[in-house]
Amino acid sequence: MTDYEDVRYEVEGSTAVITIDRPHRYNAFRGRTVEELIHAFRAAWADRAVQAVILTGAGEKAFCTGGDVKQRAETGDYGPTESGMFEIGYLHKLIRDIPKPVIAAVNGVAIGGGHVLHVLCDLTIASETARFGQAGPRVGSFDAGFGSAYLARVVGEKRAREIWYLCRQYDAHTAERWGLVNAVVPAGRLLDEAKVWAAEIGEKSPTAIRFLKQSFNADTDHQAGLSNLAMSALDLFTASPEGLEGAAAFAEKRAPDFASHVTGH
Image: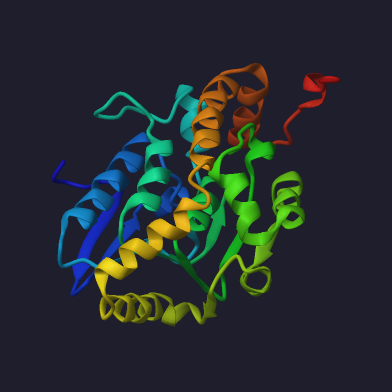
């Protein structure tokens, strides 16, 4: 893969900047987007000059709004890929495994699967205009792996359950107060501030940073098993009548009717 369509990849000094470039879809990812993100992160991993990675979204409205629900409503999947697979679980693992800190520069809404991406990054810097939240249960989706279990480690059980059960949106200062983000800056300073943090990391021992990241991850690596199980469950759920109703309602801009899917189990 040499030409990106959904992603921009740039290297400035010791920092790689990966930008999800689908502003017309609020930077929601389809299969190709995930494939290109994987390629970009692997390129940053292989580049010995790169010591930190910034992940952000194009435009001012969205960091990432997760999986492209309109695509799923139209085709029943997230579109074609070179591998024939939708590898979002591998992308999650890659963000954790790359031995270089990943900084999320959240420039707008970080919702659904986009919220999961920023949570998985080592650090998050948010624009004052950023908003955070989950949408899975509203659109017939969920992340019962890192997106929930690791989130609970970040903000605590009660907050994590609130985020998932209520699907509300929270402003940047609330997110900072909860420990969901490290810093909040004016919108016009966001990327510059992220680059300052990345440059500071670039001055440190890369070997020490690598061991520290692996040490932090070791405490929650068992959640990878939950993530694998959750992704398998999600594959089945999104093809079920309940999952399809959520996607269809989103595409048709109406409230979903989940009442017939309530069970006692």
